[in-house]
Image (cartoon, rainbow, N blue to C red; front, side, top):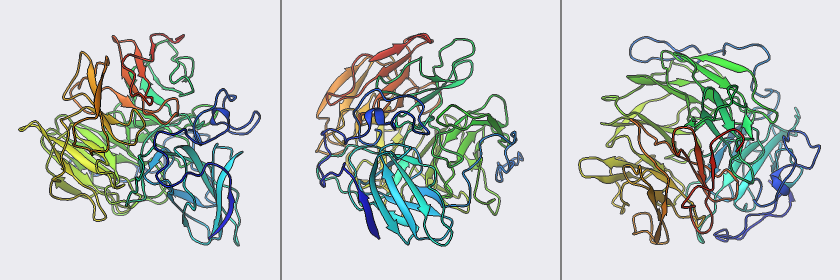
Length: 521
Protein backbone atom coordinates (compact mmCIF):
# COMPACT_ATOMS: atom_id res chain seq x y z
CA UNK A 1 0.00 0.00 0.00
CA UNK A 2 1.36 3.41 -0.99
CA UNK A 3 0.29 6.71 0.53
CA UNK A 4 -0.08 9.13 -2.34
CA UNK A 5 -1.63 12.06 -0.56
CA UNK A 6 -2.25 13.28 2.96
CA UNK A 7 -3.53 16.80 3.41
CA UNK A 8 -4.43 18.33 6.78
CA UNK A 9 -6.77 17.08 9.48
CA UNK A 10 -4.73 14.41 11.20
CA UNK A 11 -5.08 14.02 14.97
CA UNK A 12 -2.91 12.27 17.51
CA UNK A 13 -4.19 9.12 19.19
CA UNK A 14 -6.78 9.93 21.84
CA UNK A 15 -6.64 13.61 21.03
CA UNK A 16 -10.15 14.24 19.79
CA UNK A 17 -12.10 14.75 23.00
CA UNK A 18 -13.76 18.10 23.30
CA UNK A 19 -11.47 19.87 20.83
CA UNK A 20 -12.42 21.69 17.65
CA UNK A 21 -13.37 19.54 14.73
CA UNK A 22 -10.98 19.48 11.79
CA UNK A 23 -10.87 21.98 8.98
CA UNK A 24 -13.06 21.82 5.93
CA UNK A 25 -14.33 24.12 3.24
CA UNK A 26 -16.81 26.64 4.61
CA UNK A 27 -20.09 24.88 5.19
CA UNK A 28 -18.45 21.60 4.22
CA UNK A 29 -19.33 22.17 0.57
CA UNK A 30 -17.29 22.53 -2.56
CA UNK A 31 -16.50 25.98 -3.97
CA UNK A 32 -19.20 27.71 -5.98
CA UNK A 33 -19.75 25.98 -9.28
CA UNK A 34 -18.55 22.55 -8.14
CA UNK A 35 -20.73 19.69 -9.29
CA UNK A 36 -23.00 17.86 -6.89
CA UNK A 37 -23.48 20.78 -4.54
CA UNK A 38 -26.93 22.17 -3.82
CA UNK A 39 -26.35 25.45 -1.98
CA UNK A 40 -23.51 27.94 -1.62
CA UNK A 41 -21.22 27.82 1.37
CA UNK A 42 -22.47 29.71 4.40
CA UNK A 43 -20.27 28.95 7.38
CA UNK A 44 -17.36 27.05 8.78
CA UNK A 45 -17.00 24.54 11.55
CA UNK A 46 -16.78 20.77 11.27
CA UNK A 47 -14.14 18.39 10.02
CA UNK A 48 -15.10 16.88 6.68
CA UNK A 49 -18.78 17.76 6.87
CA UNK A 50 -19.15 17.70 9.39
CA UNK A 51 -38.26 -9.58 -5.93
CA UNK A 52 -41.75 -9.64 -5.16
CA UNK A 53 -42.50 -10.85 -1.64
CA UNK A 54 -44.68 -13.89 -1.09
CA UNK A 55 -47.80 -12.99 0.89
CA UNK A 56 -48.45 -16.53 2.04
CA UNK A 57 -48.93 -17.20 5.73
CA UNK A 58 -45.64 -17.67 7.53
CA UNK A 59 -44.09 -14.59 6.01
CA UNK A 60 -41.86 -16.23 3.40
CA UNK A 61 -40.43 -13.52 1.17
CA UNK A 62 -38.17 -13.48 -1.84
CA UNK A 63 -36.04 -10.69 -3.26
CA UNK A 64 -38.10 -7.68 -4.19
CA UNK A 65 -36.86 -8.04 -7.77
CA UNK A 66 -37.23 -5.23 -10.26
CA UNK A 67 -39.03 -2.24 -8.76
CA UNK A 68 -42.21 -1.07 -10.45
CA UNK A 69 -40.94 2.26 -11.76
CA UNK A 70 -40.44 4.30 -14.91
CA UNK A 71 -37.19 3.81 -16.76
CA UNK A 72 -35.94 7.21 -15.60
CA UNK A 73 -36.32 6.35 -11.89
CA UNK A 74 -33.37 5.97 -9.54
CA UNK A 75 -30.96 3.16 -10.34
CA UNK A 76 -27.69 1.87 -8.86
CA UNK A 77 -24.41 3.36 -10.08
CA UNK A 78 -22.73 1.87 -13.14
CA UNK A 79 -21.39 -1.66 -12.67
CA UNK A 80 -18.29 -0.98 -14.81
CA UNK A 81 -16.17 0.08 -11.83
CA UNK A 82 -15.71 -0.87 -8.17
CA UNK A 83 -18.82 -1.21 -6.01
CA UNK A 84 -18.45 0.15 -2.49
CA UNK A 85 -19.44 -2.13 0.41
CA UNK A 86 -18.60 -0.57 3.77
CA UNK A 87 -18.77 1.69 5.66
CA UNK A 88 -22.14 2.29 4.06
CA UNK A 89 -23.07 5.88 3.31
CA UNK A 90 -24.68 7.36 6.40
CA UNK A 91 -22.69 5.15 8.79
CA UNK A 92 -20.84 6.05 11.96
CA UNK A 93 -17.42 4.39 12.10
CA UNK A 94 -16.00 3.03 15.33
CA UNK A 95 -12.36 3.89 14.59
CA UNK A 96 -10.53 7.05 13.57
CA UNK A 97 -8.69 4.82 11.05
CA UNK A 98 -11.65 3.00 9.47
CA UNK A 99 -11.50 -0.10 7.28
CA UNK A 100 -12.98 0.48 3.80
CA UNK A 101 -14.17 -2.41 1.59
CA UNK A 102 -15.32 -2.69 -2.01
CA UNK A 103 -15.73 -5.28 -4.79
CA UNK A 104 -16.00 -5.43 -8.59
CA UNK A 105 -13.27 -4.96 -11.19
CA UNK A 106 -9.71 -6.08 -10.54
CA UNK A 107 -7.12 -3.78 -8.99
CA UNK A 108 -4.89 -2.03 -8.32
CA UNK A 109 -7.02 0.79 -6.98
CA UNK A 110 -6.79 4.40 -5.94
CA UNK A 111 -8.63 5.35 -2.76
CA UNK A 112 -9.28 8.73 -1.20
CA UNK A 113 -11.07 10.42 1.70
CA UNK A 114 -12.30 13.97 1.15
CA UNK A 115 -13.86 16.81 3.09
CA UNK A 116 -16.65 17.30 0.54
CA UNK A 117 -18.66 15.17 -1.87
CA UNK A 118 -17.05 16.70 -4.98
CA UNK A 119 -13.63 15.99 -3.42
CA UNK A 120 -12.34 19.51 -3.89
CA UNK A 121 -10.38 18.94 -0.67
CA UNK A 122 -8.70 15.55 -0.39
CA UNK A 123 -7.66 14.57 3.14
CA UNK A 124 -5.93 11.24 2.57
CA UNK A 125 -5.22 9.13 -0.50
CA UNK A 126 -3.81 5.64 -0.95
CA UNK A 127 -3.04 3.18 -3.71
CA UNK A 128 -3.58 -0.52 -3.01
CA UNK A 129 -3.76 -3.88 -4.77
CA UNK A 130 -6.39 -5.15 -2.32
CA UNK A 131 -10.12 -4.49 -2.31
CA UNK A 132 -9.96 -3.08 1.20
CA UNK A 133 -7.80 -0.62 3.01
CA UNK A 134 -7.31 0.65 6.54
CA UNK A 135 -6.85 4.39 6.60
CA UNK A 136 -3.14 5.14 7.10
CA UNK A 137 -3.65 8.21 9.31
CA UNK A 138 -6.26 9.14 11.89
CA UNK A 139 -9.26 11.28 11.00
CA UNK A 140 -10.58 14.07 13.16
CA UNK A 141 -14.21 13.96 14.26
CA UNK A 142 -16.53 15.10 11.51
CA UNK A 143 -18.36 14.06 8.35
CA UNK A 144 -16.21 12.68 5.54
CA UNK A 145 -16.57 11.21 2.04
CA UNK A 146 -14.73 8.28 0.43
CA UNK A 147 -14.25 7.05 -3.13
CA UNK A 148 -12.39 4.34 -5.06
CA UNK A 149 -11.39 3.91 -8.69
CA UNK A 150 -9.76 1.02 -10.54
CA UNK A 151 -6.31 1.78 -11.95
CA UNK A 152 -5.49 -1.65 -13.39
CA UNK A 153 -6.24 -3.47 -16.66
CA UNK A 154 -9.85 -2.17 -16.61
CA UNK A 155 -9.54 1.38 -15.27
CA UNK A 156 -12.62 3.26 -14.14
CA UNK A 157 -13.65 6.69 -12.98
CA UNK A 158 -14.15 7.49 -9.34
CA UNK A 159 -17.13 5.83 -7.68
CA UNK A 160 -19.95 7.87 -6.20
CA UNK A 161 -18.80 9.33 -2.90
CA UNK A 162 -20.07 7.66 0.28
CA UNK A 163 -20.36 9.63 3.50
CA UNK A 164 -19.49 8.61 7.06
CA UNK A 165 -19.14 10.15 10.49
CA UNK A 166 -16.28 10.01 12.97
CA UNK A 167 -17.64 10.73 16.45
CA UNK A 168 -15.91 12.74 19.14
CA UNK A 169 -14.10 10.36 21.47
CA UNK A 170 -12.61 10.51 24.94
CA UNK A 171 -8.80 10.37 25.36
CA UNK A 172 -7.49 6.84 25.09
CA UNK A 173 -10.51 5.45 23.23
CA UNK A 174 -9.16 2.36 21.41
CA UNK A 175 -11.91 0.08 20.06
CA UNK A 176 -11.17 -3.58 19.37
CA UNK A 177 -13.68 -3.67 16.49
CA UNK A 178 -13.05 -1.53 13.43
CA UNK A 179 -16.49 -1.40 11.86
CA UNK A 180 -19.45 0.92 11.32
CA UNK A 181 -23.07 1.18 12.37
CA UNK A 182 -26.08 3.01 10.94
CA UNK A 183 -26.18 6.57 12.03
CA UNK A 184 -27.69 9.39 9.97
CA UNK A 185 -29.51 10.43 6.79
CA UNK A 186 -28.21 12.94 4.23
CA UNK A 187 -30.69 13.19 1.37
CA UNK A 188 -28.90 15.93 -0.56
CA UNK A 189 -25.39 14.76 0.31
CA UNK A 190 -24.06 18.10 1.54
CA UNK A 191 -22.51 16.78 4.75
CA UNK A 192 -25.28 18.01 7.04
CA UNK A 193 -27.50 15.24 8.49
CA UNK A 194 -31.19 15.53 7.60
CA UNK A 195 -34.51 14.38 9.08
CA UNK A 196 -37.51 12.88 7.27
CA UNK A 197 -41.07 13.25 8.52
CA UNK A 198 -44.65 12.74 7.40
CA UNK A 199 -47.31 15.45 7.23
CA UNK A 200 -49.88 15.20 4.46
CA UNK A 201 -46.97 13.79 2.45
CA UNK A 202 -43.40 12.65 3.18
CA UNK A 203 -40.72 15.32 3.26
CA UNK A 204 -37.16 15.83 4.45
CA UNK A 205 -35.89 18.68 6.60
CA UNK A 206 -32.38 19.40 5.32
CA UNK A 207 -29.83 20.10 8.03
CA UNK A 208 -27.62 23.17 7.95
CA UNK A 209 -25.50 25.44 10.14
CA UNK A 210 -28.69 26.71 11.79
CA UNK A 211 -29.96 23.19 12.44
CA UNK A 212 -33.52 22.77 11.23
CA UNK A 213 -35.49 25.14 9.01
CA UNK A 214 -38.92 24.84 7.42
CA UNK A 215 -37.47 26.85 4.54
CA UNK A 216 -35.13 23.93 3.73
CA UNK A 217 -37.57 21.14 2.97
CA UNK A 218 -37.69 18.52 0.19
CA UNK A 219 -40.32 18.66 -1.23
CA UNK A 220 -42.42 21.39 0.37
CA UNK A 221 -45.80 20.12 1.59
CA UNK A 222 -48.26 20.78 -1.26
CA UNK A 223 -50.85 21.80 1.33
CA UNK A 224 -48.51 24.14 3.16
CA UNK A 225 -48.40 21.94 6.25
CA UNK A 226 -45.66 20.97 8.66
CA UNK A 227 -44.53 17.33 8.85
CA UNK A 228 -44.14 16.03 12.41
CA UNK A 229 -44.44 12.23 12.06
CA UNK A 230 -40.78 11.16 12.19
CA UNK A 231 -39.74 8.67 9.48
CA UNK A 232 -36.15 7.94 10.50
CA UNK A 233 -34.06 5.83 10.21
CA UNK A 234 -33.62 5.68 6.43
CA UNK A 235 -30.89 4.20 4.25
CA UNK A 236 -29.17 4.42 0.84
CA UNK A 237 -30.93 1.65 -1.12
CA UNK A 238 -29.24 2.14 -4.50
CA UNK A 239 -25.65 2.61 -3.35
CA UNK A 240 -25.04 6.06 -4.84
CA UNK A 241 -24.06 7.68 -1.53
CA UNK A 242 -27.28 9.68 -0.99
CA UNK A 243 -29.85 8.59 1.59
CA UNK A 244 -33.16 7.57 0.02
CA UNK A 245 -36.57 8.33 1.51
CA UNK A 246 -38.91 5.35 1.91
CA UNK A 247 -42.51 5.45 3.04
CA UNK A 248 -45.80 3.65 2.45
CA UNK A 249 -48.84 5.38 1.00
CA UNK A 250 -50.91 2.18 0.84
CA UNK A 251 -50.86 -1.44 1.93
CA UNK A 252 -48.35 -3.93 0.55
CA UNK A 253 -46.08 -1.42 -1.24
CA UNK A 254 -42.91 0.38 -0.19
CA UNK A 255 -42.53 3.74 -1.90
CA UNK A 256 -38.93 4.87 -2.35
CA UNK A 257 -37.62 8.23 -3.54
CA UNK A 258 -33.89 8.27 -4.21
CA UNK A 259 -31.96 11.23 -2.86
CA UNK A 260 -29.59 13.42 -4.84
CA UNK A 261 -27.94 16.83 -4.79
CA UNK A 262 -30.83 18.47 -6.66
CA UNK A 263 -33.86 16.77 -5.10
CA UNK A 264 -35.65 13.46 -4.89
CA UNK A 265 -36.04 11.26 -7.97
CA UNK A 266 -39.38 9.82 -9.03
CA UNK A 267 -41.05 7.27 -6.77
CA UNK A 268 -40.09 3.59 -7.03
CA UNK A 269 -42.82 1.20 -5.84
CA UNK A 270 -41.69 -2.13 -4.41
CA UNK A 271 -44.02 -4.99 -3.38
CA UNK A 272 -43.85 -5.68 0.35
CA UNK A 273 -45.38 -9.14 0.58
CA UNK A 274 -48.33 -8.10 2.73
CA UNK A 275 -46.48 -5.78 5.10
CA UNK A 276 -48.05 -2.36 5.48
CA UNK A 277 -46.13 -0.24 8.01
CA UNK A 278 -43.75 2.56 7.09
CA UNK A 279 -40.46 1.05 5.88
CA UNK A 280 -37.50 1.22 8.26
CA UNK A 281 -33.95 1.55 6.95
CA UNK A 282 -31.81 -1.19 8.47
CA UNK A 283 -28.38 -0.66 6.92
CA UNK A 284 -26.85 -3.40 4.76
CA UNK A 285 -27.86 -6.79 6.19
CA UNK A 286 -26.62 -8.78 3.19
CA UNK A 287 -23.28 -6.98 2.82
CA UNK A 288 -23.74 -6.25 -0.89
CA UNK A 289 -23.45 -2.47 -0.79
CA UNK A 290 -27.19 -1.79 -1.05
CA UNK A 291 -29.27 -0.62 1.88
CA UNK A 292 -32.15 -2.82 3.01
CA UNK A 293 -35.59 -2.02 4.41
CA UNK A 294 -37.92 -3.73 6.87
CA UNK A 295 -41.70 -3.46 6.74
CA UNK A 296 -43.79 -4.78 9.61
CA UNK A 297 -47.25 -6.34 9.62
CA UNK A 298 -49.46 -7.57 12.44
CA UNK A 299 -47.70 -10.92 12.87
CA UNK A 300 -44.34 -10.61 11.11
CA UNK A 301 -41.98 -8.35 9.18
CA UNK A 302 -40.40 -8.67 5.73
CA UNK A 303 -37.08 -7.66 4.20
CA UNK A 304 -37.46 -5.31 1.24
CA UNK A 305 -34.49 -5.33 -1.13
CA UNK A 306 -35.03 -2.51 -3.60
CA UNK A 307 -31.76 -3.19 -5.39
CA UNK A 308 -29.43 -6.16 -4.98
CA UNK A 309 -26.22 -7.33 -6.59
CA UNK A 310 -27.78 -10.74 -7.23
CA UNK A 311 -31.08 -12.40 -6.38
CA UNK A 312 -30.69 -14.24 -3.06
CA UNK A 313 -30.93 -18.00 -2.93
CA UNK A 314 -32.77 -19.63 -1.29
CA UNK A 315 -35.81 -17.44 -0.65
CA UNK A 316 -35.77 -15.47 2.57
CA UNK A 317 -37.79 -16.34 5.64
CA UNK A 318 -39.90 -13.53 7.06
CA UNK A 319 -39.14 -12.25 10.53
CA UNK A 320 -41.40 -13.73 13.19
CA UNK A 321 -42.47 -12.44 16.60
CA UNK A 322 -44.05 -13.81 19.81
CA UNK A 323 -47.23 -12.03 20.81
CA UNK A 324 -46.31 -9.37 18.19
CA UNK A 325 -47.46 -6.55 20.46
CA UNK A 326 -45.35 -3.37 20.72
CA UNK A 327 -42.94 -4.35 17.96
CA UNK A 328 -39.51 -2.78 17.62
CA UNK A 329 -36.73 -2.97 15.02
CA UNK A 330 -33.13 -2.06 15.93
CA UNK A 331 -29.75 -2.56 14.27
CA UNK A 332 -26.06 -2.75 15.09
CA UNK A 333 -22.93 -4.75 14.32
CA UNK A 334 -22.53 -7.22 17.16
CA UNK A 335 -19.64 -9.22 15.62
CA UNK A 336 -17.80 -6.39 13.87
CA UNK A 337 -17.89 -7.96 10.39
CA UNK A 338 -19.23 -4.86 8.65
CA UNK A 339 -22.70 -6.28 7.93
CA UNK A 340 -25.75 -4.92 9.69
CA UNK A 341 -27.23 -7.17 12.39
CA UNK A 342 -30.94 -6.89 13.08
CA UNK A 343 -33.11 -7.06 16.20
CA UNK A 344 -36.86 -7.68 15.88
CA UNK A 345 -38.57 -7.52 19.26
CA UNK A 346 -42.02 -7.42 20.80
CA UNK A 347 -43.39 -7.17 24.33
CA UNK A 348 -42.40 -10.76 25.19
CA UNK A 349 -39.30 -11.72 23.22
CA UNK A 350 -36.31 -10.57 21.18
CA UNK A 351 -35.09 -12.20 17.95
CA UNK A 352 -31.56 -11.61 16.71
CA UNK A 353 -30.68 -11.88 13.01
CA UNK A 354 -26.97 -11.66 12.27
CA UNK A 355 -26.08 -10.07 8.94
CA UNK A 356 -25.73 -12.81 6.36
CA UNK A 357 -25.54 -12.82 2.54
CA UNK A 358 -27.62 -16.02 2.54
CA UNK A 359 -30.54 -14.47 4.39
CA UNK A 360 -31.88 -14.16 7.93
CA UNK A 361 -31.84 -16.87 10.60
CA UNK A 362 -33.22 -16.12 14.05
CA UNK A 363 -31.66 -16.61 17.47
CA UNK A 364 -33.67 -15.94 20.63
CA UNK A 365 -32.47 -13.43 23.21
CA UNK A 366 -34.12 -12.80 26.55
CA UNK A 367 -35.69 -9.36 26.61
CA UNK A 368 -38.49 -7.24 25.19
CA UNK A 369 -39.17 -4.14 23.14
CA UNK A 370 -38.07 -0.87 24.66
CA UNK A 371 -34.47 -1.92 24.01
CA UNK A 372 -31.46 0.00 22.73
CA UNK A 373 -28.40 -0.99 20.72
CA UNK A 374 -25.37 0.92 21.99
CA UNK A 375 -21.66 0.18 22.46
CA UNK A 376 -21.86 0.63 26.22
CA UNK A 377 -18.37 -0.76 26.96
CA UNK A 378 -16.70 1.28 24.20
CA UNK A 379 -14.96 -1.65 22.47
CA UNK A 380 -16.40 -1.00 18.99
CA UNK A 381 -18.82 -3.93 19.06
CA UNK A 382 -22.51 -3.10 19.33
CA UNK A 383 -24.17 -4.24 22.57
CA UNK A 384 -27.83 -4.84 23.38
CA UNK A 385 -29.58 -3.27 26.37
CA UNK A 386 -33.10 -4.59 26.96
CA UNK A 387 -35.65 -3.94 29.70
CA UNK A 388 -36.70 -6.59 32.15
CA UNK A 389 -40.19 -5.34 32.88
CA UNK A 390 -40.68 -7.70 35.84
CA UNK A 391 -37.78 -6.14 37.76
CA UNK A 392 -37.80 -2.67 36.14
CA UNK A 393 -34.09 -3.08 35.41
CA UNK A 394 -31.97 -3.53 32.30
CA UNK A 395 -30.54 -6.72 30.82
CA UNK A 396 -27.37 -6.19 28.80
CA UNK A 397 -25.64 -8.43 26.27
CA UNK A 398 -22.16 -7.65 25.02
CA UNK A 399 -21.05 -7.95 21.41
CA UNK A 400 -17.74 -9.52 20.42
CA UNK A 401 -15.95 -11.40 17.61
CA UNK A 402 -18.40 -14.32 18.00
CA UNK A 403 -21.42 -12.02 18.04
CA UNK A 404 -23.82 -11.20 20.84
CA UNK A 405 -23.13 -13.04 24.08
CA UNK A 406 -25.88 -15.56 24.96
CA UNK A 407 -25.65 -14.65 28.65
CA UNK A 408 -26.33 -11.27 30.22
CA UNK A 409 -23.41 -9.01 31.02
CA UNK A 410 -22.41 -8.49 34.64
CA UNK A 411 -21.48 -4.87 33.92
CA UNK A 412 -23.40 -2.26 35.85
CA UNK A 413 -26.33 -0.71 34.00
CA UNK A 414 -28.04 2.66 34.32
CA UNK A 415 -31.69 3.10 35.14
CA UNK A 416 -34.04 2.44 32.18
CA UNK A 417 -34.03 5.21 29.60
CA UNK A 418 -35.80 6.33 26.42
CA UNK A 419 -33.06 7.95 24.33
CA UNK A 420 -29.26 7.65 24.13
CA UNK A 421 -26.71 9.93 22.46
CA UNK A 422 -23.64 12.03 23.16
CA UNK A 423 -25.05 15.50 23.65
CA UNK A 424 -21.97 17.16 25.17
CA UNK A 425 -19.44 15.57 22.79
CA UNK A 426 -17.15 14.12 25.43
CA UNK A 427 -17.28 10.62 23.92
CA UNK A 428 -19.38 9.11 26.72
CA UNK A 429 -23.00 8.07 26.26
CA UNK A 430 -25.74 10.20 27.77
CA UNK A 431 -29.32 9.04 28.36
CA UNK A 432 -32.70 10.79 28.52
CA UNK A 433 -35.82 9.86 30.43
CA UNK A 434 -37.00 6.60 31.87
CA UNK A 435 -40.12 4.75 30.76
CA UNK A 436 -41.86 7.98 29.72
CA UNK A 437 -41.57 11.69 30.45
CA UNK A 438 -44.62 13.52 29.15
CA UNK A 439 -43.95 16.65 31.19
CA UNK A 440 -40.24 17.07 30.66
CA UNK A 441 -37.21 14.78 30.96
CA UNK A 442 -33.83 14.58 32.60
CA UNK A 443 -30.56 14.17 30.70
CA UNK A 444 -28.05 11.98 32.56
CA UNK A 445 -24.47 12.48 31.38
CA UNK A 446 -21.93 9.67 31.22
CA UNK A 447 -18.29 9.94 32.12
CA UNK A 448 -15.05 8.09 32.85
CA UNK A 449 -16.76 5.97 35.50
CA UNK A 450 -18.39 3.91 32.75
CA UNK A 451 -21.85 3.15 31.40
CA UNK A 452 -23.53 2.04 34.61
CA UNK A 453 -21.85 4.52 36.95
CA UNK A 454 -23.88 7.35 38.49
CA UNK A 455 -24.17 10.24 36.03
CA UNK A 456 -21.53 12.92 36.25
CA UNK A 457 -24.36 15.47 36.17
CA UNK A 458 -27.96 15.88 35.09
CA UNK A 459 -29.78 18.67 33.30
CA UNK A 460 -33.48 19.19 32.60
CA UNK A 461 -34.99 19.28 29.14
CA UNK A 462 -38.57 20.39 28.65
CA UNK A 463 -39.21 17.93 25.81
CA UNK A 464 -42.21 15.65 26.09
CA UNK A 465 -41.13 12.13 25.09
CA UNK A 466 -43.75 9.42 25.23
CA UNK A 467 -44.27 5.95 23.79
CA UNK A 468 -47.43 5.62 21.71
CA UNK A 469 -47.86 1.85 21.60
CA UNK A 470 -44.47 1.13 20.05
CA UNK A 471 -40.76 1.90 19.90
CA UNK A 472 -38.73 3.92 19.30
CA UNK A 473 -40.46 6.79 21.08
CA UNK A 474 -41.39 9.96 19.20
CA UNK A 475 -37.92 11.49 19.39
CA UNK A 476 -34.80 11.27 17.22
CA UNK A 477 -31.14 11.90 17.92
CA UNK A 478 -29.53 13.65 14.93
CA UNK A 479 -26.65 16.12 14.55
CA UNK A 480 -28.52 18.52 12.25
CA UNK A 481 -25.90 21.28 12.31
CA UNK A 482 -22.99 18.83 11.86
CA UNK A 483 -20.99 20.22 14.76
CA UNK A 484 -20.26 16.81 16.27
CA UNK A 485 -22.68 17.20 19.20
CA UNK A 486 -25.83 15.08 19.06
CA UNK A 487 -29.11 16.99 18.95
CA UNK A 488 -32.67 15.95 19.80
CA UNK A 489 -35.76 16.48 17.63
CA UNK A 490 -39.24 15.83 19.04
CA UNK A 491 -42.75 16.59 17.78
CA UNK A 492 -44.45 19.38 19.70
CA UNK A 493 -45.40 21.36 21.54
CA UNK A 494 -48.89 20.47 20.44
CA UNK A 495 -49.79 18.49 17.35
CA UNK A 496 -48.46 20.85 14.67
CA UNK A 497 -44.95 21.80 15.74
CA UNK A 498 -41.45 20.32 15.70
CA UNK A 499 -38.77 21.20 18.28
CA UNK A 500 -35.00 21.02 17.84
CA UNK A 501 -32.78 20.89 20.92
CA UNK A 502 -29.13 21.48 20.04
CA UNK A 503 -26.24 19.69 21.70
CA UNK A 504 -23.12 21.60 22.75
CA UNK A 505 -20.08 21.27 25.05
CA UNK A 506 -22.43 22.29 27.86
CA UNK A 507 -24.88 19.50 27.00
CA UNK A 508 -28.34 19.41 25.49
CA UNK A 509 -30.35 22.62 25.42
CA UNK A 510 -32.97 22.58 28.17
CA UNK A 511 -35.48 24.44 25.99
CA UNK A 512 -35.91 24.24 22.22
CA UNK A 513 -33.18 25.90 20.22
CA UNK A 514 -35.79 26.31 17.51
CA UNK A 515 -39.48 25.45 17.19
CA UNK A 516 -41.08 25.06 13.77
CA UNK A 517 -44.77 25.87 13.74
CA UNK A 518 -45.24 26.82 10.08
CA UNK A 519 -43.40 26.52 6.77
CA UNK A 520 -42.11 30.06 7.20
CA UNK A 521 -40.25 29.46 10.47
